[in-house]
Length: 354
Image (cartoon, rainbow, N blue to C red):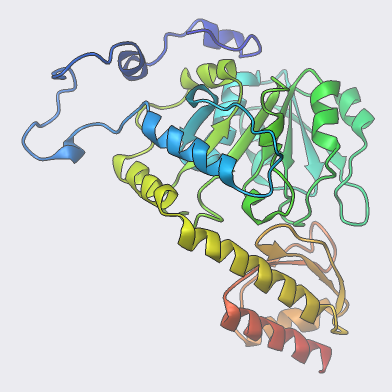
């Protein structure tokens, strides 16, 4: 199996794990007597499907059908998809496969999802930060990243915790400007009104996209994510990924949701409507100084009297994420159902004295 030239030198010295090799290279048997499992207790006695070809076909068809999307559809095949145990496994896999400990540099944009730095530091990588710019923190100074020359740059797009989506020109500029990988984490892309970076995938071999079923698809407990990338990138990751990580039950749950997505799609529209309504109502209140433009299922307001807001939320037993260590006087607030949003709004009105 050919692997990407930028994989760590160690990877090329490894043999692909035997379960992966067996299933990918020898699928013409009718009876498998190689696994030492119990033949009398049903389908779950068998190991999970490691190829997941049918699931990949359904997934590709679904994500290419989502709007907004360009008129020209990208050519994505099974070879461009790797399912993972949540996007966290995807993040860890990419670092372990491509970044050399004590040598390589990882670039992050600030503010961003804290897990990127956490895993990079665990693997003894140097981490350098480049600040997000602009009124909605959706611009970057490309030259600063080029000067760092990172092995990878991680872009949370739309951003967590801010909620904004990067300017449309940034990702293609980065892919063309650096030799390292541009890793785009699209955990919240289903809530955005702008197309995914998926449509650049065939054009840029150094682009890697992370997806998850935990957020918009409502399956955080299932633990399923996906990596979308060039075939050689996917091949290299297979040498590092633990075989059979995605359980049979998880695969069946994801498949069922992909085949019957209407209820999920309706919920996305409802969440976006609730988000926009909540932003509109909060913007009228004296307690609220600013709200970043959000293309996610959360918002980040900045408050004038932050202490008063925290006190009222505590009194109403409403838990949100305090992000004031990242952006002063800010909270990240998930969009709940109509009743939950109304209670949150009432608490902020009380903090405003309204």
